[in-house]
Length: 413
Ligand code: CTP
Image (tube, rainbow, N blue to C red; front, side, top):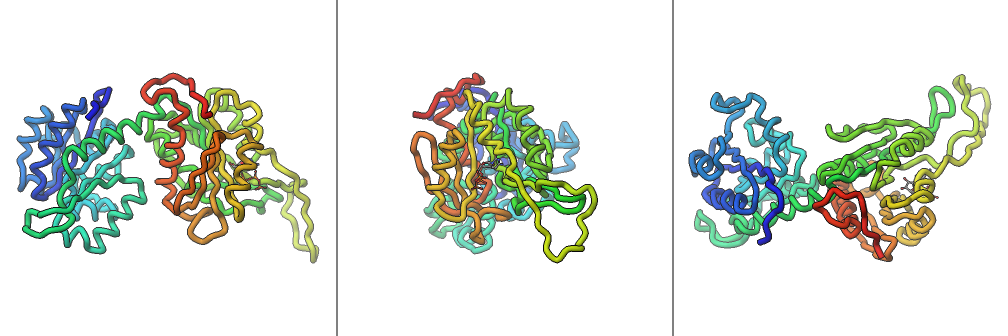
């Protein structure tokens, strides 16, 4: 195993299962790989292994209760999550997996699961029947959709004597998964990323506007993922119900024109532009200062084209990496290829709209990703959170080195 370059802060959650003793070996291996480890135990974990073991191995205080008088701070769940680069729960019982999936926060570890915005890796270990039960499977799939990495369990003989899936993944595989995740999370260190999201609204009078049903979910997921990978993120969004994470510079706008102005204001410092916004293509020619009355049987409005923000950026692209979206109801790849070329993009994500489970409003997207170099990858229907990760993975060939903070990029073919 190659070691991780910089000292990283790993938060290790240990829950109450027979495999809890293996967490001691995980601590040892993580420390060998240049990670500092802080352990958070649930009450039931203490039935299997003592806090003293972890205190000795980490050289640090072991956290447990929300109201622990021995704890150095009263706001542990906030402090610990701020300091950590990754949260690993190993072993994870069916109970903590259920709490994580449903937002139950009744002890320190379950609170941390909600406050940590860093990557989360969960290594389940339990009886095979429990693991295979529909409720645990649903909870795991729900966590996966939210971008949580699940490692294992493996098949084999279990502590209870049963055979089947439920054994904690090999300690080395768990530590490897941590290392891979930490490396991914450094990929955008020092990069300035601009993401646009949501719809725009083009008003025709003080109470009416023309718009589209974009929820902003894709753009917000991209901004979150870029932040998690170490980027400085600016998010410019039209009106949505989404909340940006703390740490993202958020600029709300309403019209296509406002979006364009804000985009061009921050453009000089930006390395990577991701235009996920569903910008209105047309705006009413005339804006009526007074409410348009319904005194006519037939109302005819004239529209003129708005500026194509992405095409404008494409004209002055320089060293910037440009990622666009193509919302299509037909000929996904063909239409997207045209937009990729016309707007001078590096990557275009063509998403199928007009089908019930994908696109506008949905938590899922079915896409084809095309690059300037001629690559074409068809992706299955997946959560927008996971798709955001896939899209940012496509940037890897452009980045000279994931570990430097240089602003230079290599070009794709
Ligand atoms: N876009 C933009 N400014 C606009 C319209 C679109 O910057 N006025 C961007 C979108 O954010 C998206 C890409 O251009 O990244 C493609 O948008 P899309 O709506 O799929 O295509 P259009 O270029 O608008 O063409 P059409 O509507 O005819 O398909």
